[in-house]
Length: 508
Image 1: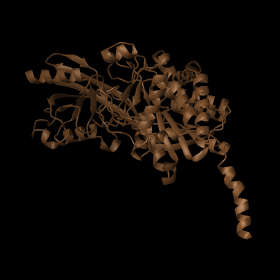
Image 2: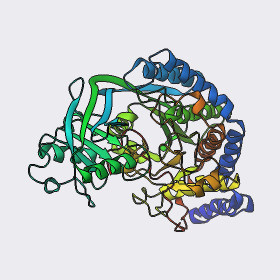
Image 3: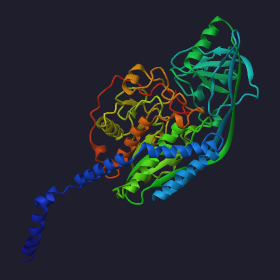
Image 4: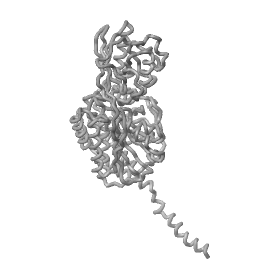
């Protein structure tokens, strides 16, 4: 009897589970529908014109705080407070993450050829460089022989050849820190590193303790001209590189939705700090403003995301990704597993822009290899969105020079977009994107001219659409991260490639 009763009770349950209506109900289908609906709404509502109002605020802050918004300065503190207040108003859980770092500010960067033919040469001080005395030093140049690892090993410096001289070293093969340290070991009193690609050379030694001798960067053209001069005879220069270095505190701003499954956290970030040379409205007010605009529209939509959405505005990126590094370093092993993806938006409105998507699957075969599993899918999803909008795009390498770097290092799928820094636009890119070939994507990169007039609203709008689509999609549905990517090798265009992608370039 008991067996018969159990069978009788089970029969309706079995029939119910096999009913057509039950079979039709697929939670994955609903998630996809919710994602598509929210993505469409956010793309429609998120506006470059509205985001521009945040850029105006960043410009106003810079104008009243010494012309910049560098980490550790009043300009950055005010920018972080503005972002924090906006996010609280939008209804997010918002917090500061404070950390200490070494603030830097260039005080002098001069290079002049005294003989045989006097001329001035533009040079950029490396972050965390040692400083010359006030007024600089006068010394002869000595060029390091060029090979695949120029200036990286002690053997590159012939005995006695560099004592009391300034080493002229080609970029490539090792870090700037290693080059200047090797030159110092050979008796050099300074180092001038010249680029191995078009564009200015703006980089970092990586750590104050690593600085051994005053070090600056010059263009490939200037470096090769100096090498040619040396082939004809001695070259004497005046060289002044000085930098203030001071321990200070600064804050990341972190905001997240109240609800959503924390085990499926979707994270997007941009750095809020500028360099001390200018207000940093493209680098990276643009990414910061784009995230703010989409964050506001997400709350205005009244959507209840299935997944937790977290936004970050990093500090001290220009000093070497210090804010994102500090954040990732404090994550528990569970915290790292909960972050299912990280998207980075740094310089998304360059005046002579390209539309570059981080090459998650390394299909371009340029530079670094693929990102962690899932990165190829993030690239594909952005590419598909741009394709639907009829927007051309290219890959750009994971150089490790923006805030995706620390996330990639711990295996978190990463991606995002970028519109170019001091790299030079090719003729093919000018045909594809418009703009001017032979000119940097951003001629005001790391300069005083990176102000409101330095924003290309077309690029800004396209990339805000990318952010909005990603937030709307991944807030509800992560299934695309599990769909295989058909990787199609490209011709290997470096995309934004040659130019460094911020003042924290430490590698070659």
